[in-house]
Amino acid sequence: MLPKYRVVDISRRLQVGKPTNTYNSVRRLELARITFPNQNNQIAHDLTIMSHAGTHVETPAHMGRNGKNVADFAPDTFVGEAVLAEVTHRAPRGSVSAADLENATRGDVRPGDILLIWGRYAAEDRPRISLGAAQWIVAHQVKLLGFDSVDGIDDDAHDVILGNNIPMLEDYRGLEQIHRLRVFLIALPLPIVDLDACPVHAVVLEEVVGG
Image 1: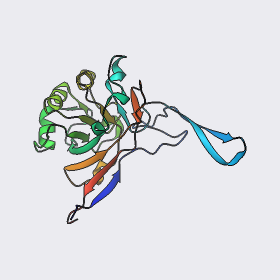
Image 2: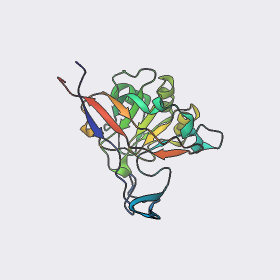
Image 3: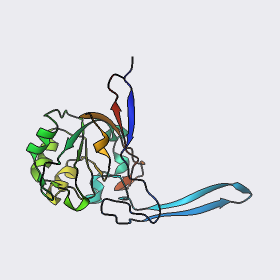
């Protein structure tokens, strides 16, 4: 019998004029209704959105024109087994170390895993991923790094992660709903050529005990 899963939405819901990220700022999101001549029963919209609005994937192209962009990554980069790393024990506005990640994941990070870092903090108190933690992530061959804010990583660590062609999933929410250490993540961006980042609808599949 196949295992049963529950689907947990970890994305930020986007609405025109409403905050789009951790810090309640409003990044550009506009909808303009389009009508079709002689087809009054059909509508569409022009959509204008900042590439870093809401829950989004950021790629090395964010660092410069020569980096890999959203369309350069295979879809399975953004789909797969994920390990949760809760770092709530860290002091507010502190640094997340390699030892923190080793302990939070119980040493169970495998090549090709996705790593989702999170904590029970107010937005302004979230700790940041340190350079040492970034080097640990690279050494463990993580394929996608996630954290629950828009700036949850130090600048030098940011450069190490993207410099090693590891995209980042930023500003998700709701991981406190998850009870298992390992889950399955789906966070697919649109494959738009030359785009540095893209909003995603990120969901976690958690195996149901006894399913």
